[in-house]
Length: 138
View 1 (cartoon, helix red, strand yellow):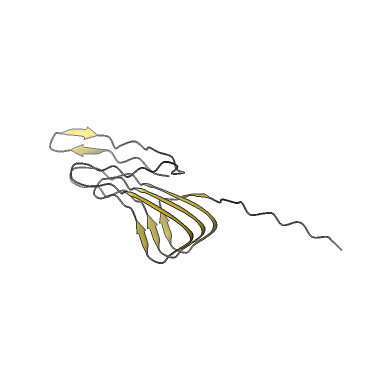
View 2 (cartoon, one colour):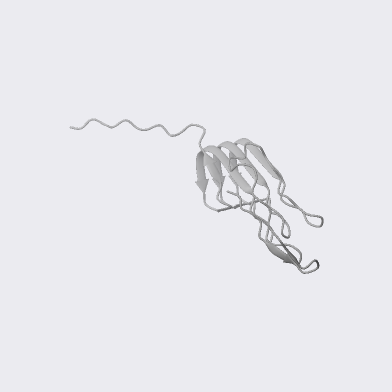
C-alpha cells in the first residue's frame, strides 16, 4: 500500500538525495494527493461513491516524472473492474528518482476484478458474507 520514492543523485549539486517517506494509511481514511516538485505534479485525489461502479476504461491517478501517485477511494455496493485502476509513481527523470506509488482503497460488498489494479488495493467489505448453515445429513 503505497511506497517510498527512490533515492537519486543530483549531478548539478553533486549530492545524493533520499526519496520521500510514505505517509497516510492504506485505508485512505484521510485522502492525500501525491507529492510533486517544482516542475512536475503528483497524482491527485479521486473519490468515487455510488451504488454500482462498472469500470470499462481507465481510472488513472499517476504521478508525473519522479512524483508520487495519488489516492483513489472507491465506495460502492458492487464494483466490476474490466479496465485499469492505477495510482503509480512517475518514472525517474534526469533530475529526480522514481516516485512512490500512491494508494487505492476499495470498500464494497461485491467485487469482480477482470482488469488490473496497481498498486495492490486495500479492500474491505461493508457487510461480510454470511455463512451458510450446514444442511442436515440423512
